[in-house]
Amino acid sequence: MLITRRLEFDAGHRIPDHRSLCRHLHGHRYAIEVTVAGDVTLRDGDPRNGMVLDFSEVKSVMREVIVDRWDHAFLVYQGDTAIRSFLDSLPDHRTVVLDVVPTAENLAAEAYRLLAGRIAQIGDKRLTLEQVRLYETPNCWADATRAMFPD
Image: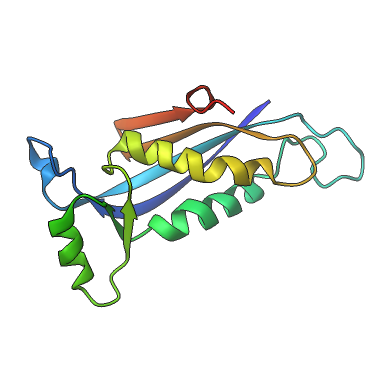
């Protein structure tokens, strides 16, 4: 069975080598959807009876691992040294330095890597992270799937 939880957050970024407007500093209202696979619990008296996992448990992990870190932050590529210097000059600025350019594709893959182990550790069940979908806009998104990350 698959279940999916969605959260939203705001963050800034830029794509330094882009040939259009995305090379400039800007922000998005991102949405992230996390899809988890597992067996439905079938035990009377179990709080998860009838569920793969309580959606609040997925939400808690998503917030801890991604949203609380990336929300209202500037997501910057480590190689974008001019912008990193500028951001470092701002007192108490919330900056997340990434090993990759912060495209929707790379952010989805990074979120998948950060979440996969945590999802697998929830509770006493065998759970797997199947997909992370990251919306950069309502009409544009990237999917990172389990097939992309062999064990």
